[in-house]
Length: 406
Image (cartoon, rainbow, N blue to C red; front, top):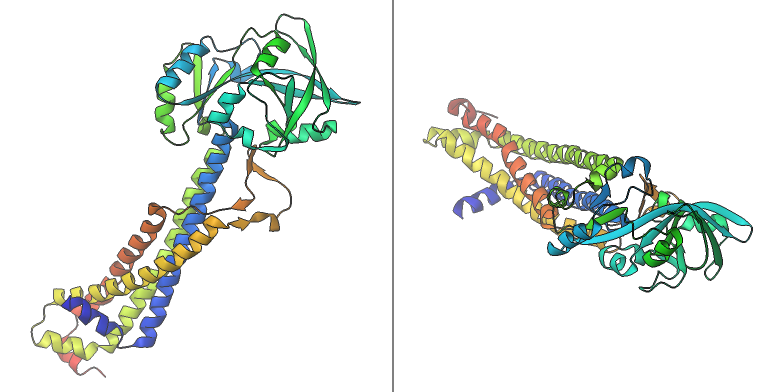
């Protein structure tokens, strides 16, 4: 404690210089915490938007299905896959897909029909929470349908309208049926917005005479299991299937996440370097101011390592004090951005999506131990290291010349 008090007293021998350096390191620490929280929030929310709404952390298809999306390439044993997922407490949603035409009044369009189990979708994914108008499908088949936002707009469709559906069934017959529009989705993703027509699995089975064909099982643990472990576990669930993680299903989004990590490292390096140079400059100025003091200390037998240690402690005390202030400011700012966020609609009107995934226009930060601890620890370490150069200069000083230094 005596060494700390000595270092603290020496720091404030020049109040203005120490104050400026303290403010600079404090500001850098606070900005790093807030920027890290915002970037971490963007990455986490982007991945959550992609995986929790409908995509899942991994998907299982029959071999070759993803290449041509043939109606007849269905999963050979979906029950085995679902059973294994249940045994390991993995959320698994079976889905069927088929193409056809939809028509409301004089308007018609092509659509990709989804056959889903609404209860399972609600339990595993957030798609049911993304209804803009009307409601999601109920657990029992009611001849209802939910449309993507842009598809509904192109059909001039409204809640309660009757929609005519024409498809080619699995047995070669022409399937046609009349449904009622129960709901219209918010912006979820380009493919869903433009072409999704979602039916209850029983209605889908009857319309397409699908005989229970399942084309996809979407898996989601909401972060409880690493995606590679999830993929490896489910890869052995059934033969003749392919397991793809969200990084393989959406490579552009995966690349974007990797780029954000690199950008954050560069951002870190710039701010940490600036803070380190500031501390080094302060300690250099202090070295020249205290030249005679160091000369006297060496003349009475103080070892060079003692001088280096004293200056390193001074820099450490300065860095810890600044980091503490920066931590308080950074936490306050990060909490504000976490609760209120930044409304990106002031920069660009309309919905924003990337790689087919819709993003929340409110950009929110995410505060966590890593987000807070790393900037504080790195700042303290770098500032202490930055003090070593002026400390070595002071330790190597010639006592006679230093005592006569003016």
